Length: 278
Image (cartoon, rainbow, N blue to C red; front, side):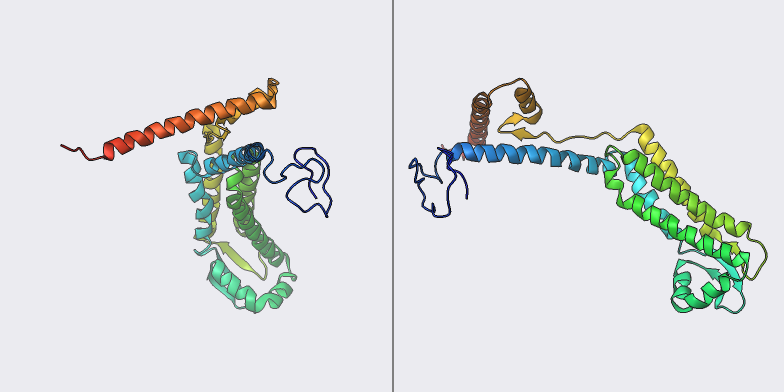
């Protein structure tokens, strides 16, 4: 059970009536205005901290022109995967010709076990498998990079974006270069236009990241208030040691001034809308 708002005595389960059995105060109505004001103060302070996170997330996406461009550079590499990635020839497997990510997925859905048995036979097969792992990892880091863009303006956002975009670039480059230096063996593979375009677009994404942080992203915070007082001033008043009653009196003064100003504006609007008679 709760405590009595007047005398502070802890109420029992049997103290279910509206009035306190000890001091007779109306539990629900006693000092109701002040309790509502305290709840409002707490909600506005919590909203301030949430608004700061929301403002940073907004700035991460549309805070500047380079930040907007970064959204597209984060997604464009995925499109290259649908172009011919590799030209492969492997006897004994249904793995032949120019393959993109769709054809590779179709192949593995039907021939996964024969493929894993084939790659164990020589170094070319093992390197081919390693290249595909690099491709999957680079794609995974690209997806993580895009998914975490809304945290780009957070305290560790810069390091996070640099790490994810550089890892995506590194693994994409490894994917293409493995095929360039693939030794002769049971697998004969050459990188296609899609592989090199994928590397280029991952590099463009990393460069866009550098440009964004070099120019900086301005974060515009929405002004928040606590009882009509700007929240920065509200915190300063608390630090200065002003009592609760003094702060509350200032809040009532400002809220009253805001209400009077709003009433004047409504009167002016009503005067403009009223028809002229005579």
